[in-house]
Image (tube, rainbow, N blue to C red; front, side, top):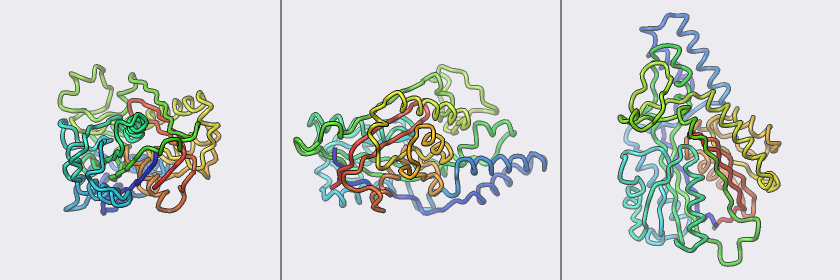
Length: 355
């Protein structure tokens, strides 16, 4: 599998920790005591410190998710040297969407003028892009499609940020909300010429899922109770489209299972990656995984501090930045590692071949 292009876009509004803390204080000053406000501020500061959160980017007036992703997609086509009619399949990967149906991929098939492409969505929370990469590789190996584009627009943060808590008890499943940033990415892939994908260097992925832990992180719809099949113990009221994430429990379980997953498959360790890209939910969690897996931290990109948690866009954003900076070059060996809501753990390895 060859990467003809990987591009990303951030919205323009830079949101700092100080701005978030001030808005949290303002939103809760009317119903919390001075002591409670101080405790809440200390908890928020501790959350940012442990995750490494500094800034995140949100859409400003006039900016839209579709606009950001379309711009990234057009730039990816230019970088790849392809016409829109050269794309055979479009995969939309991610949580950010404006409709439950049809597939969000249909929006970008239209906006990018990919009139010969078929299109569908791949959704697995923050692991969505790695899942889509796996799907694309399978299609390319069989020759079903020649050129595939993966797009995501993780631009929900501005809408889900909730600064008011009913009580301090809500902090347990609220605090990851304010570490979410926005980004859009576009990736263009094609098959390696016959015979060029050397044995052991091709794309390989492995996924594991613990569905019983689905209540650790979720975004409910209005008919949530009818479909979720599990009682949720969360302080306050769980409202439709309100992000709920028990961050500490999710990180503890997810990182533990990701470490076990990696250790259970020696071929991923034996791969000896030149560059390791992880889901940027937390630099602290990433550091823990790297140390526990015996991975050289110099090979790992700690990107949460640069743009916070950009959900399923975080791995392709890091990869796009690495290509732009020259950190990722032809022939480098790349390892992807992610723990995601679900709970899903994902590993993928490949030798990078660009245009």
